[in-house]
Image 1 (cartoon, rainbow, N blue to C red):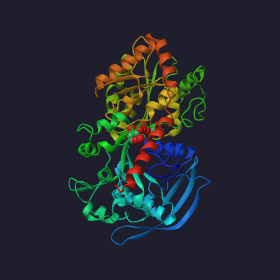
Image 2: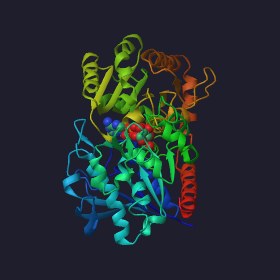
Image 3: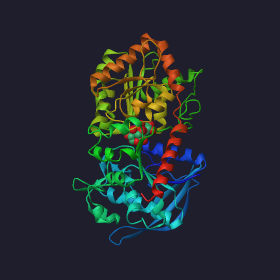
Amino acid sequence: MKKKILMVSPECSPFSKVGGLSDMVASLSKQFAEDGCQVKVFTPLYSTIKRPKNMQKVMDNLSVHMGLGIEEYASVWKAPLGKAEAVFLEFNRYYDRPGIYNYHSVSYDDNGGRFSFMARASLEYCLATGWIPDVIHCHDWTTGLIPVYLNTTLRNTPLGRTATVFTIHNLQHQGVFDRGVLEYAGLPQSEFRADSCESYGALNMLKGALYNATKITTVSPTYSKEIQTPAYGCGLDHVLRFRAADLIGILNGIDTQDWNPAVDKRIPANYKVGSMEGKAVCKEALQKKVGLNRDAKAPLFGVVSRLYDQKGLDLLARIAKPLVDHMDIQLMILGNGEGWLEEAFRNLTGANPGRIASYIGFDNDLSHLVEAGSDFFIMPSRFEPCGLNQMYSMVYGTLPVVRRTGGLADTVEQYVQGSGRGTGFIFDDATADALYNTIGWACSTWFDRPKDITAMRLNAMTRDFSWKNSSRRYDQVYTWAIGTRSLGF
Ligand code: ADP
Ligand code: GLC
């Protein structure tokens, strides 16, 4: 049976993006649609979205019933997303903002309302159009109330039989709000209890999903185990252990059209296994663009990242100066996030011209050039549910230096010195020393064992990171969820 799938997500590439969630939702949806399923992705129409020419308005007055007798009217638009369809919710009071979740790193104080509205509206859209999906795939805390609605106020509607699959992309963000948001959402106050939406006296949207979703997934097998421990469980490890039998880790795939050095239009020269000359052209172009010395011999270490605690780049900031003082390497950091870290990389760039470069901001084109033009890619994450950049790097022949956690542990294969086996350099401790030593190991391999670098590049570039395998696993989870739901769970 070809399934009808509704994805609900606060981000969807190429329309709106803060991180990998956006890429994952778009590429998985396209893959399912390619395989013949009917797929819609429901997402807000932020005013910052550049509207494509083929975007059409499909509804003028979607009525959205919130609690306290509030009824709002929103418009709905659609645009193709490969063979899938993106469905946009236009409601300016909530989505006409400069940021998706925050402005200058300060969260909007009505995020509880903004995203419970998105959750509710996605369901009202299905009911109003009569398009009843077999499964609703919910992504992260902003969609957390969807499984709760389907188990409570909407249980006796045509959506009552629809299964929910909830994917945890990042357990750190849980959607914690005052309990008044539950009332605004129109959910019964009886859901404000420890085995549903309540946590430490507040509403916790993600917790509500963990108790109410038919099945739960997360984005790598290792992260699915880590989050069941207190060290990585962000206060919800007990809930994840409780639901362990319904929790499965599936590695993200990547969009192999968008991220492919053989056809990438955002880089100055294409390359592939067997004809790698273009990579040197990209390195030179990157050095020129960002103000690094034009030096083909110095290994260039790249970073593309949100600059938050999760990513461990404070460790890199601490050792960047000794690194370039003691090793003949270059560093290029593309990122934005916490102000103090942005400032630290700006200062490092100013003090080490030609050796350290940075661009503080979000720039998709530049991110492709950093992947293509770097020799190594640094991801010292404290935790990493999956991580896409290490996969993009490997596909671009750029060897990742990563901490052994989550999806990094599941996708990067450790170098075996002298053998040319492996696809990257892995360390265990989240310390500046461990990172320093591992960058040193990569650097010495570059200079002393260049044949191993060539072999590792080949290993990395020939790995299959497409959605082929993982979308099959999601399909199994959907089937499993639909079966379970049909029994009334
Ligand atoms: P996360 O979702 O935790 O940020 P991922 O590795 O899964 O981490 O995905 C990050 C995505 O965001 C990648 O597609 C990466 O290229 C992109 N990205 C992150 N920061 C920037 C930036 N400053 N400019 C351009 N792209 C960025
Ligand atoms: C989150 C995680 C990242 C993952 C992405 C897509 O943002 O931090 O590790 O790759 O979601 O699933």
